[in-house]
Figure 1 (cartoon, rainbow, N blue to C red):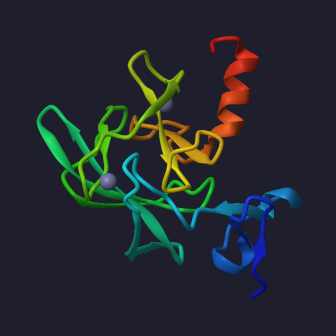
Figure 2 (tube, helix red, strand yellow):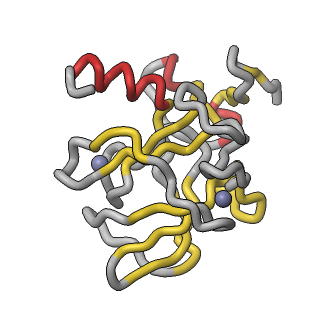
Length: 164
Ligand SMILES: [Zn+2]
Ligand SMILES: [Zn+2]
């Protein structure tokens, strides 16, 4: 398989090489793969023990009233698959998200429009958090923003909507 790197050094893998996804448009055949991800204090949260669709996922601790645990989300852009390692996630319910190693809460970028208290959580792609080199996803289980997008894109979208 040919490895292709994007301008910012992230690995681009033609999706057909990795997972079988029916796609009608050509441009959907390539998605970002996150191969570095860090908590706000700089711990790597890439979980080499838990691969999702062939790629090590991002490990995250969650807490809400009455439940806590850990899950691993896919490192593939647009992939909603996730592994719940402990605890229980509930559809439509928000969780506070923390580093699984040092327990530092992840930063919040903006409110997600799915519900009033929902947040877009930021995960840095560099050990020192840079909002332009980060991904973001909603902390509500089942939200359509539950898979990550690059935060630069999110910031642009929010500015277009005039709420930042
Ligand atoms: Zn940490
Ligand atoms: Zn949401």
